[in-house]
Image (cartoon, rainbow, N blue to C red; front, side):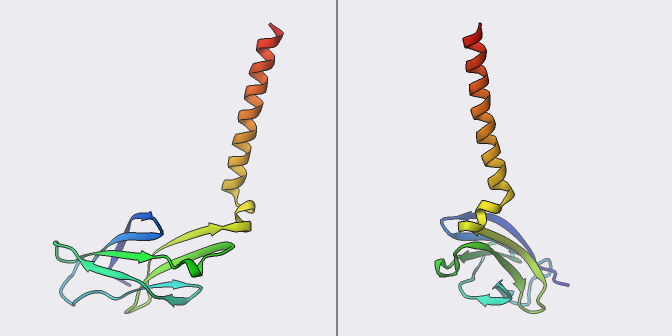
Length: 125
């Protein structure tokens, strides 16, 4: 099991950023890989921070890998394959079937019904 921990900081302008921590530093920079559909993706950037055992991890998501559907990127310890973290991007037609899209649609309909009901109550008084 990996001793490394990866904490998400943000996902902004197509770049996933996090902090990688090693409780027992000293063996050099850790090796982290990003996988999409069990295949490695290039572009992982590690930069050591001032505190020993901490690195800033940046991963610019390649636009060529995005399209319709759900895409899950997995961060793994390259030395043993242990999963450190993951994130998903949902785009295109698959989003229509997503429960979050359904909830947003229901909220919009509920807001419309509330406005119509309030208008009806005002007009009937």
